[in-house]
Image (cartoon, rainbow, N blue to C red; front, side, top):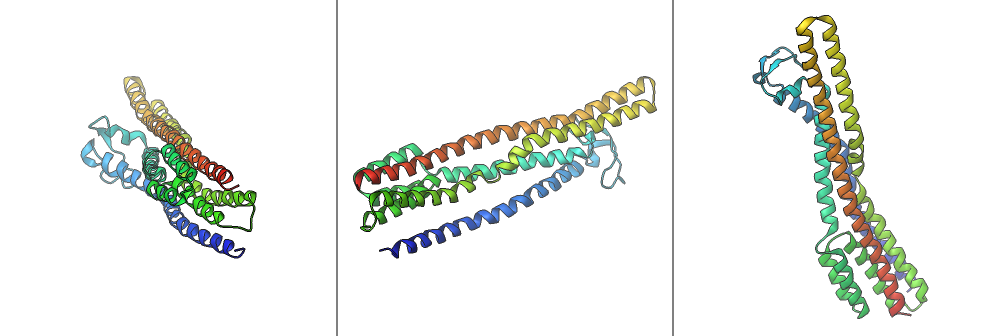
Length: 289
């Protein structure tokens, strides 16, 4: 019996390692995604907003940054906000990308059904000393709480037939198994939230940088001309510069809102995981003294 327990531990560790592998693969892709978003941001700015047909006086030989004049629409004026605009569009795409990625991951981790109801069902089966039915509930839940509970229940079942350890030692073994399973689940839940929290602050700063650059350009044009033409150029330059501020603040607002939404949902899952571990240890201590 003493050698059976390490073998069981090795087996669970091997299973956990295979579950971690896809997470590492997705994480490497996640670091490539921001670069692709910035590239797509430039493509949108240069070839969609900056298309020759959107201007009365296009610069067809402009290359990387054409100096188009006479935008035909209000949205097209965003192009004249400068080279910071594609960066801001890329930041917005980053936020959208990781919002979708986190939404799919958190939804999968939440599993099926209500977490509190799932824990109550497991508690009921354990009170009746029916571990197999409790394991079946975990298979139906298919979430992070179910995964942790299932790992703990397997150790729970092993400890029932163990005659060499006392109750306290058995409870500690179950608790350790739950902690190991929790350590594998939590990183998956919290991964990539750093991108949303970073964009929440950085997007606003980048927008202000674009605004400052636009204001410098506008006042430089004001100093080179005079009269009514100068006032017109100044108002146009300020209007174009403020597009950077609007993009930055809008991106930051979306990132903050979604970050708080995901954090709240993850806290609910974490609470369910903690409650599941408490349920297993208390149930075993009460039923198998």
